[in-house]
Length: 562
Image: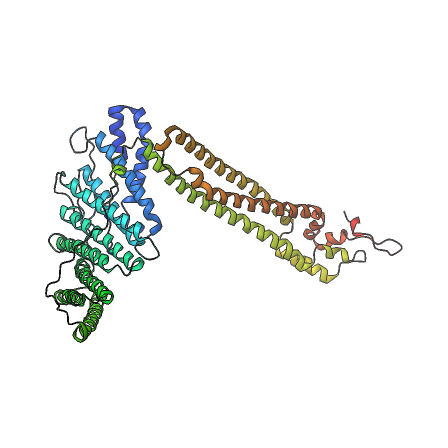
């Protein structure tokens, strides 16, 4: 499968120019009402002009595709309502996009607003192609991959249609009719390849069907190669890893089509004792094509060269086996020119035209915006709450560690009540007190207790606010669903928010437990607050607090200490 590079755009101050024009023509109220929409459109464009990083992140592709379609829909409305150009009363802005081909990316500024649409449309095709590539494996879904490739094919064919009406010669190589034609054929070829791979996995004995599908893939790859190997694409495209791979795939699928036809006739021969001659003829055809490729190959990736050699070995071993059987037993005539294999286009181009031309002020586009906004809020809330929980748990753990380990280490303050003689403080006990003083300000221990509870209360209030916002969003979705009925096709907000609400409840429960634990710790700290205060006294003050022995020599109770 072949990936395509995205076009890279440059930032432009479009919103301010549009708002100025709207204020002059329609008044400030209209401008103020449209400003949030225009800002949103600008935010979308900011993410779309630097897409190459997202292309390598499978989790971002669906979001990028949705934002691209929303942006294109907005842009269609903008172009219908405003005039761009250098004349008076027009919006003067330049659209700058780099060519996706070549190491030195060529920049071609344009004042034509249609160049902006074509560039975003091209990137959308690249995104759908990449989604198809990510799905085209046994762990993915070949069926879904085919749909993505055929949607991309429609996008590139749509570019060809729009280029026919484009005025100007300020477009890059990747926005020429030739390149759009090449990309459309490439998308169809990769869709056919998915069908072929799917058949090999799910129906490995359907040799005749696989032969037809492989032949159609070869035809599509051949068409893509024809366009890519001529000027101007051949001047800028990677000859080894792009054009060369297209050429190899054409030969490979042609040879595989003949080889599958060979296996089909071998199957008939084994079942019906006839057809071995045609099987030999077809495997010979496969060998001819791979040998022809080896003679014509130029600079190609080593992996393709190795694959071609391996295929030739496989084909020749099959030819030798079939010839031995035919010479020894069947003696069938081997036709010099077996029937050509009828190609089969197993898929149809999938259009997304309605999603691209729908007016921006319709409810349908809002239905697509809401789930995406919820998804973005979900990530934002999740990150904030997780950071908050981590912070609270850290405080709880630190507090518990201090309370359970520090005081236990020195056996304080209970050890202070072990002195049995008045006006006497054993030196070893005083050393423990000194160590405790040096290690930490014990008066701060009581202050620490209760901090977690305060923090938990505040953060629980934050979580309640988040839950309320989600509930409000679900109510709005319910109202719109009741108002627009079947036209409101977005997934229910309650379903979208379910996992988020579950996570928020989990976090709130954790905070509540932390608060309960801290309240218990605070109660304990308050009970021994006066005793802990002893640890802050110096030696003289501490001796003054020592219990006095009675005249009968019996020790006073520790509770006598005030």
